[in-house]
Image 1 (tube, rainbow, N blue to C red):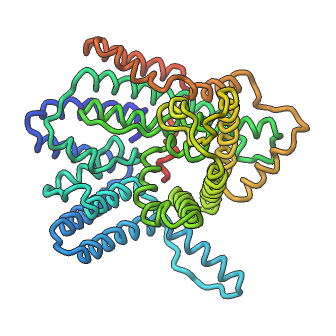
Image 2: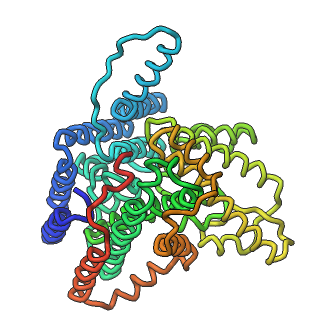
Image 3: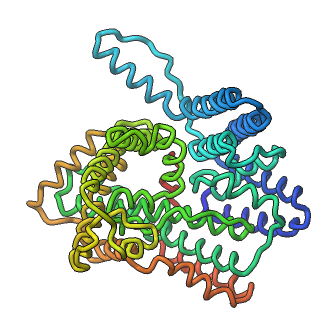
Length: 493
């Protein structure tokens, strides 16, 4: 069930109305939302509802046992079992075929061909996201950052809550579970923010992302050898915009839908293409995954402890494993290698600098730029350094996007080779497409608080006015969007 469809609109209208009628009965409301979430997930394939329930049961049971354990050794042992079971489920569905394909290739190269047990395995939608939420829950219980939840209903709803179930954002138990204990309230701030985010997300996905995909990106990436450098360059910039609008659009809708049900999710994107370093980029892109990798992979590997070599190694391994998480293909491995290597080199370069510019955090929208410069460096020089940093960072990210988007390693290499051929004019370098890409990238440099300010301005509008705004906005987006409803890119992960 896709967000920008009539089916989801009817589903959500029913859930919205019934859930708020049940607001004075919190336990019954949670049961209803759990049933609605399983219906939402079963809409793709009802057989995977059992997998979702099994994953939830594993993590609920593990959390309870860890919470009741008296010794650190027992707690660590139980955590190890829980994480292993989670990763075993994820690994079987996501990497079984890739592993056997790679093994078959190695055996063939060695002249040891064997009949291997290949299976036709369907990848369950959203398995990575609900698995990561389960791992974060049991790990946080083990670390005593949260208490184990007594009610299985709360854990099951936390893992399966439908707005973020299939493509994130990855929600922390410490952020969501306390909200289940409080009486739900739908105030004007949540309503105005939710409606605005839904409209912004639909526009990003249905108009910008779908136009760029259908009119440019899909055609060029299908056979890059048929196009010259101008088209290839425009298409990779367009894909950078497409994947951002596609994924951040989904996150916006998910956060907006949750807000209309009375729950607050954290932001998942913060104008990533204005980043002046890879470090800053990962503080702005898919924030929930970046923080998950930091807290549950990078830090357990040792983090920044143990010296420069160990830190560089941990950064590198984290990004490579992050690439493998995205998919069972060598293109994703190389995507992770590019980011891991670039982060390591960037850290080495930055170690020679002295201190951050006083205005760096402001220029980066409050997140910190990650660019280190001398305190006595002139402001003009600092702006030049930051502009250069933005350009270099963006093009490293775009290079990695080529491998991320390409269907195979051969296609990615052909794409890069074609970028050197500028002997022919571009077929797709039309004013509309160029302007759409340029405007979408320029939007990253608008004030970061625009959405919150606009939502604040909408608060005085009554429910009838907000309902009209939502309905009119959806009709307008539908009128200007291209035909068809393309699935969200991150559904495959």
